[in-house]
Image (cartoon, rainbow, N blue to C red; front, side, top):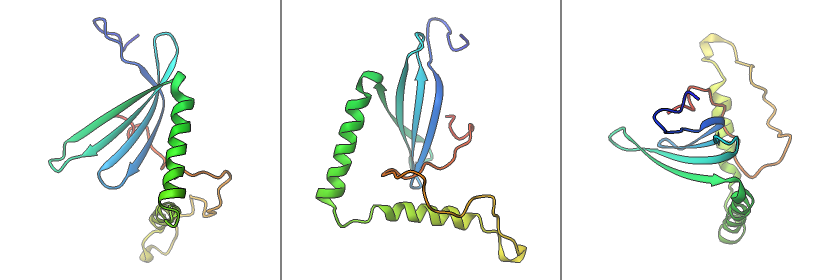
Length: 143
């Protein structure tokens, strides 16, 4: 393997997603493979500091813990939404992202055209409590 140098092994990423969370935080979800062709998940929070450097924190999640992790995460988020903040409109964040994405598709008025490459139908095919992840290029997913 090309990642193996002098006895060290760096797992290959086989799937990646990126979520921008505000101006200074980004979350990366990476599925990586082991030498034995097993898989694990790394969740990385990257925060930009005032001096333009980055702090990174990682969580390694292994397959035997996936169900417990997602169950506990879901239970915890539901508790916040239903018990602690039942009147808060969590979907407002999704609407704000959608309106920002939609307005970025509109070209300046002097151009006289609108970019219609993105569908304008806001209906989702499957319900989800998580905000949609913005599309990310391979270059965005690299450190």
